[in-house]
Length: 172
Image 1 (spheres, helix red, strand yellow):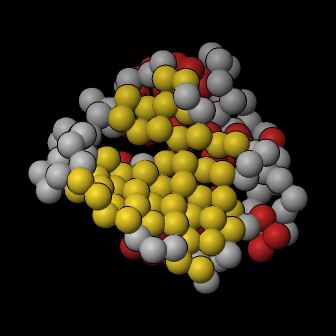
Image 2 (cartoon, one colour):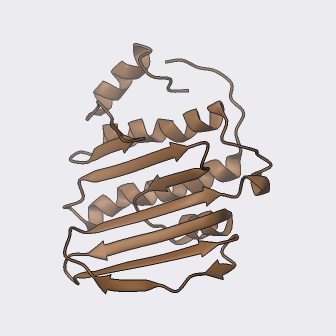
């Protein structure tokens, strides 16, 4: 394991963590859930993940310049999509439409970096936000985890530990 000191913003980390934790808990409610995709883009300031949490997602919305929620139900044959901007002060009209695909929930948000006294997502923050993707892949059987469109090559906690001990991934 590569250990190093990092500089990060705890508030941004907690918002991201809350949404990701709820994403993993969604597996209990939806046994058919088989994919979690996490995209971290320092240039567009956007983080995308599946799942939804009462407080984590709301705080993510409040501290974002743009926040989009999309969820779809194959049982109800409906898809819901809504976007908020300017720290949740502007809400676009929700769109509900017929849907025939698989269940899914997607949250996309662009953190309001000014509120976190940041100009961009720095290397340390990106590393910190990336680490849980590996932990989720190791601890969520039956779920394929993607980080920035790359399938993570681990499926068990043992494989995760092996990656960290061999220095194949920066596990902070």
